Image (cartoon, rainbow, N blue to C red):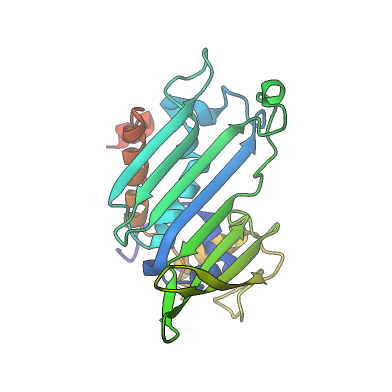
Length: 286
């Protein structure tokens, strides 16, 4: 980067919060077996002719709420997917923009063999008793964006025909807005098995809860306070970059943003929807 180059930063603000950085240190990306992201907002929060659902303005749920889900699984696996296993969408009702997705669902295969599943819905409905009567009611289920990561089981020989299997899952509640509220549930399940017939002899489960609202230590270049929002932590890092201070080291490089958009484009193509258009303003610059 040239010394006088402008500082540009894509606003994935959640990455700059200490809770997210703590979460990433809880596991090794190569050990991730499965990651699931659920982002859901109740129907009616945004009108169906909202800017988010305007194709000519690069609208669509995958470009909005779903882009966080894409960013998250790329961070969890620290890699790009090798294949999109499936991608489907729920269209907007008739009379609204048919080229925009109201909800998006996709499954990806990563190079380590792990699977990522994302679900993003900006018009969530139903999910209650008596679905015939309630299917069109706004859904307030899954209101906190949630990420679940399951690690591969680790097996230890216990002698004879016995083996011990240890598997850890981590659930990050409200990963997008941890400054408002969040919780990480670290669930460790240990099973003693007979390796010959696979019979489980004993199972133990332990759950640890973790919350992080600030950096372990603060300094002139690593500022923090428990009252800081994700946006404030991001702003501090932006200022550090402008002033050429070290800071936390958290950043979204231009190449990262390009790969993010490539994954979104590939997902849209898999659904059969057209790619989002380049804005007229950018085309004039080019």
